[in-house]
Length: 591
Ligand SMILES: [Ca+2]
Ligand SMILES: [Ca+2]
Ligand SMILES: [Ca+2]
Ligand SMILES: [Ca+2]
View 1 (cartoon, rainbow, N blue to C red):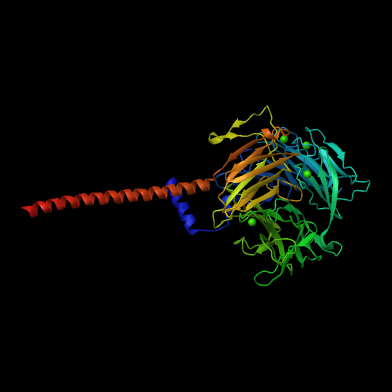
View 2: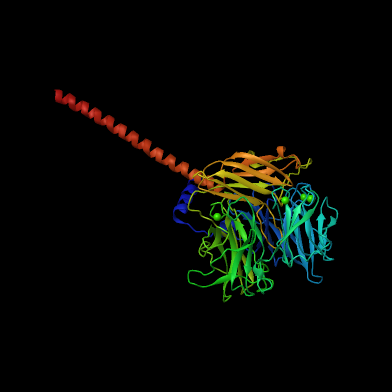
């Protein structure tokens, strides 16, 4: 049986190289759209939180290590209003992952925030008529007071900026954001790309707020945030009638610092689009939007479609697709005539014409083949938990107004190394100690998605140059930002040790030396104030496919060895017979 499967796998590897693995990943269940990621049942596999049934039902697709990889579960909750965002996290500090759901109430135009409380593999659907919070726009998940219980930031129904600090399941404590120099706080942009991440290297996460006028940076202090500076919209595009999309913070040049990266349209129709980077001023990354047939593309204007998911904001999703270390992007474009909409891969490459920046993004028009249908969103996700980021694509059929989710397998054509780091909330629950899991490994019951940690590494390349990068974990949570709860750094072909890995959480940090490449590291910052006691779990979870490949390789080696041994014995036997015949001949000759 196993032999048959190995043989089939060998045949599959040698003859089929399709990148469409939709049925292997999702089976027959395709009528959903992804909304968030997180390990709901603490089995080290990242589950996908999806919306079904006209965006009114939340469902958790649990990840497996055998196909189909993502399977529907009975973990579902339905709402009457449409769900606008999902943010998994621990909102009561009992270590179990809860699910924040925001719904939009069309009668009041408010957002209602509901929290579905999680237990051991279970959820308790909330009562839709009693939301935890009503607010304007969508909240950003942060940890305001460094207690690992997830808090929220946003605009309340009186149009004031507030923090909602969660403790247990009671109503959160509301803390108003202090004004700076008595200047009025301008309204937050909607949709916003507010971010919670450390920008000044003190390991306390800061707040970047996208307002209706500019970007505001507020530095994290032990209790709250202190205004730092304001960055104007790039190139005056908004006053000229263009659009500023959702921002990202990326270490674009592997300098060990995060740059603000923003997709832009110079005009209302996005016929002239680009990506801008902020570092001591704005830089145009000079993206070439002409495809090989010289057809021009651009971003999808935010108000092109009403009620088509993912298109209300120009959003980039990041991940290192080719594992060279430089963060790449996924973005959705339309042709200038607006006839086609499709998601593409943008590779981070050297830029010779960009002023003040050494890197840009190059559109790879065919990288996501065979997917050529209309798609509205693409996001990175590691299906086989092997460190290589694959892609989830959402296709949209205009005629039927249906969404179909697809799985694209990233088949890297060379052996690239990586390091994957996940920082968890370091909370423990004495009622639920570490419980034994399957296959002899300890199953953790503590730790869920934590926004704000910074993760950095340093190493030396094979040529002897220093090399490092930094990334923020889960800096955004609203408007389908779809951040993964972990960070994968590609290391290219470098087989060296990672000399130093630095993880900063809530103003503290810890370094680990000499990390083996291709390790998957889970950092548990507990107790939060004593970084020296933070635990790290170093493991490699070989996927079924890797195991099967290993089995196939062992099988092949075994077969070859058997053939060699058989041939050797045959040879030896023939030699022996020959020697006997020789002896006989000699005998006869002698006579
Ligand atoms: Ca919880
Ligand atoms: Ca908190
Ligand atoms: Ca900071
Ligand atoms: Ca890359």
